Amino acid sequence: MTLESGAVIAQELDAADLVPSEASSSQTVEPTSASSFPKVLRRRLDSFFAEQNVSPKADRTMWGKIALSLAVLVGTWISLYAFRPGSWTFVALYLLGGLAQTFLLLNIAHDSNHNAISSRPIVNKTLNYVFDLCGISSYMWRILHHRGHHSCINLHGEDDALSGRGILRFTPYEPRTPLHRFQHIYALFLYAFFSLDYVFVRDFQHFFFPTHGYLKRTRHPLREYAILFAGKAFYLTYMLILPVIVLGKSPLLVAGAFLLVHLIVGLSVTLVFQTTHTIDTTYFPADRSEFDNGVYHVFATTADYATENPLVGWLVGGLNHHIVHHLCPFVCHTHYAPLTRIVKQTAEEFGVPYRQHPTMTRAIWHHLILLKQLGNENSF
Image 1 (cartoon, rainbow, N blue to C red):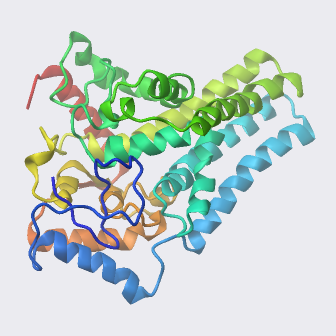
Image 2: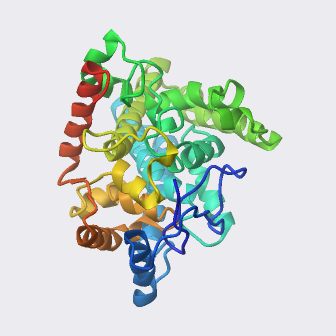
Image 3: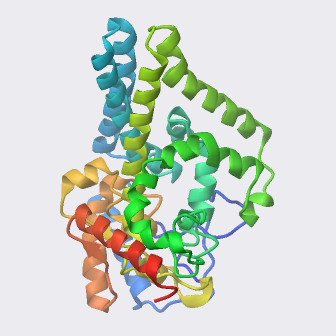
């Protein structure tokens, strides 16, 4: 797989640096002509920011989203301890805090993970700790998302997003079991536990019992082990322990509210991502060499949804504009809508298939269609 390097179009590669910087250039094995689709697309996307005279990083809308989401999260917890509400109000405020966490993960943490918020690394690094604030290791998510997804989209055995642990079959190259016949029925139930899995299991597994080769070869800094345990302790303390000790709430009430929060976070985040790569019309390459250029790899393995609905884009951090996200990972998501229009127009001109669904509901439906197909067939 070869990739185009450029100011806007960028794709992380399998390199020694598992978390590449924006300045890192990609290696092109086979150069493309000046009139090729990847070259023209890159030029048009780059020209957008020059012609509009705007920065590809956070604009006022993005900074407003950051301020609003943090204010809601902090405000809910201040309200809990300032007003000491009854059980029902406690649960309502607790769930509001969970919604704020979901919004933060999709809108702030993800962009900061890609250094897309600011040209100053310290700003992105600081905001990336939103992951830890929500009980997830920002360090491990960063590695897995860059090396285990962006550099190997829909590649069996490499793309961590395709890991179903034998319970779910996301690719035709995964062995099929009788249980998979029903995966389109039980998948949504399992998705609701996605964030709980990260908080209590997956982060520790990747640190101490890694299955990916690149993680086995990586020596994690000692400070990241300290941050892992400190972050988990802080999260569980403010989410579970303090409400019981300080507010005197029933452990069962707090545990129930905690579970409800994670059902919301887990189901929301999982569906936002799964509907962009694992649907019945996206492609699953057998290996990295199938495409001469990484731009074609992105178009074959990625799909958009509800790109004409600004509310959806605002809520999911622009991840419904997912093709642009993979083409321009270092660009703030508040710029995705006009860039998607450029992508659509250019793809149409060159006859490159552009996959999209008009609504998120349709995207979810086609994800479930894929799960049903994979559960009943060994291959396509």
